[in-house]
Length: 440
Image (cartoon, rainbow, N blue to C red):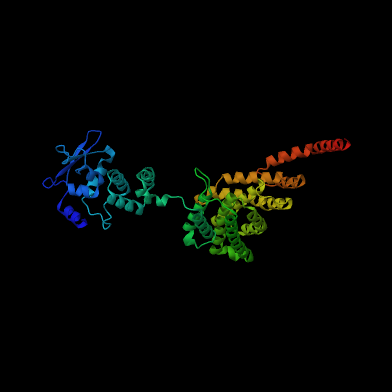
């Protein structure tokens, strides 16, 4: 049977009026009426609609000309797809020819017609093609609108769009976080950046829920990866401190140190989303004096300025976590971290502003101006949470300094003045209330 149909297809050609025994009239609501000269054996072999329409069991089969002319009504937008489907009925579709479809959009249109008219062989071929090739975003949107209406035979097309089970998501997240924090060679920086961006995207709640809901195991894995990254950063810090002059003259040491700082800045984003910043904040606190010492040794070059920027980025995120109560540190540590980073920041900002205004490489210093404001707010929050005597010490140093403009601690100064002035009255009132309650 198959070989006979193949032979018929070879001898019959679409549009050959000499051999045609049936006309297919493609008609639209807009009045379009095209005639295609076809062959009954071709149409009925692979299409249920034509097989039914041209059979002896069709209700109007005895009417004159009903067997020699078949009407097919369609929308104007689907007209060409109907023509293409009829042409495909004349083609041997056995998987050996893959260039019949002329793109995803055309194949999708033919698929709809094939489902409507009942052409299983063409349906299978369309599905196999669409499922196997890449889609543009607009094509993907169209697939999502159309394919779900076509039934189970078209379901394989949607396989790449189905939700992934949680274990697969966890596996790829763990692999990506390990790679993103592994400090790969510079040749893989683009891949590392992509992994970091996608990890952040997986955890972000936007129009959709986060792709991954982190449990204790995921949080543990992330902390372990970041701790290993921090260990490598500490080793790099030790190298630079060991022989600072020679170390800073070696480009590789500078690049490696900068790379670690950039990765640590990104790691803060992930740790914040997972609400597990404590260990990172403790580690940054422990290393702060060494970091500042190394940064103050570097000569004023664009590379060193960029390194200082990266260090300030990380510090800003650490101070934000402390200042807004996401990580609770003892008073002594909060005071210490202010004393270490406040002088560095107020001296470094004018230096950076000067470089970014005057340097030809200013565009390379991609620094968010809002970060300065965020850093200033964090300092104010931390200072206001210190004991009043410690606040006075910090504010005295600030007012006496040449770099009083940044960070602007005016708010902290005003609050300290107010609290100090009313402190005795407040405490005396509390004492009176306490005494009154005891006498009752």
